[in-house]
Length: 246
Ligand code: PGA
Image (cartoon, rainbow, N blue to C red; front, side):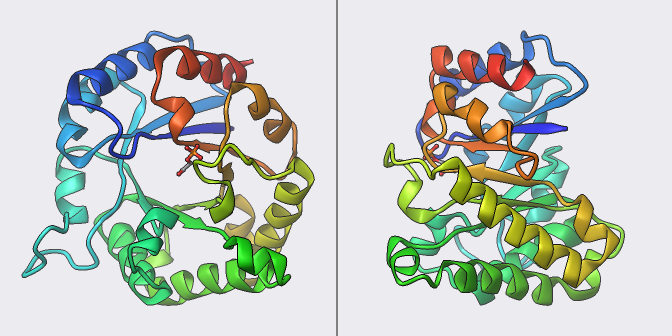
């Protein structure tokens, strides 16, 4: 299975999001490809309706189920709106102050609610330059899994490897660098989770577009793509869908 995860961030008005969802729905999806849109939380219901049987997720969830958390969105309420996935730990949220401890709580909250969390991990440019990228990424994964603890049993989740310096910059990772990190992540998941860890999809993200998508999808260690900018315009989304479905 190859996944196309479309992170629409805060780019779109509701009408635009619904139009893109209809475009995705109108494409012919083979069994080997799967689409999930991550619209603004305000658009989940209308986008889900427009997507039909394609997947919808939220871009973040709060660390608690309910309570005094102004501005946060409960994972349980996302489930009520029929979202199935949730990004957690996206680099834009980490840049706004989320640390591994908070991301771990969000990851656990998403699992507990029955969502499929997409745990976003990736090193900064500094960490890559100082060759600390593997440590940084493994720590992000380990701390989330630690926080989830028993919540992991019988659930599923995904990992998105998105080097921070590649997101929204047009400077996508070299496919061999992405492949190397995906293998490191896979090894770590298998070590920590055994057989279950071998099944967790690992997708790449960071300046993916229809032109470079095929290079990543050709890598056996890459189970799909998390795409921001290029998934927010009809023409480039159509082109991406063509690549993922081919
Ligand atoms: P980008 O964003 O494709 O615009 O680089 C990816 C992401 O933030 O998930």
